[in-house]
Image (cartoon, rainbow, N blue to C red):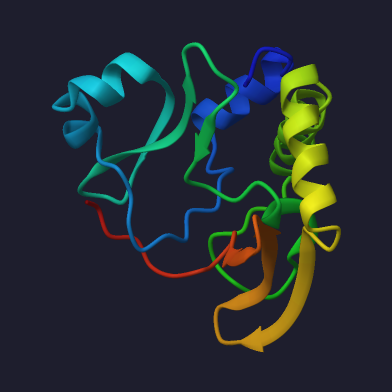
Length: 161
């Protein structure tokens, strides 16, 4: 996922607080390590800590274009409400754009693009952004994949599984 990131952005991700972590649940590194099936399927790329528990923040499958992110790069350039934990530094915004570029390029791959086309043919309205006004949440992105809407982005506090 990070292969096309410039060295300065990778260094900033490793040394500066550039990620927004607003999740109630996560996969702890300890639980990942204790699960052979997860270890054999996913490669852990990054971890974070809530001060007590180290949790997986980015992972990718070894053989398939399957990715897991436990942070919100979309918040850095787009969410400007006065809220702690959303960095807007140049490095934070650049990291967000490189992550977006990665996913856009992944969607262009033949297998992924075909799956997306089939999904959109089945439900031409997906994905759709929904503006809401709730404490702690500016926008929830909804995707009606396979006819079942579900939230893709929800702000809450962190707990580990």
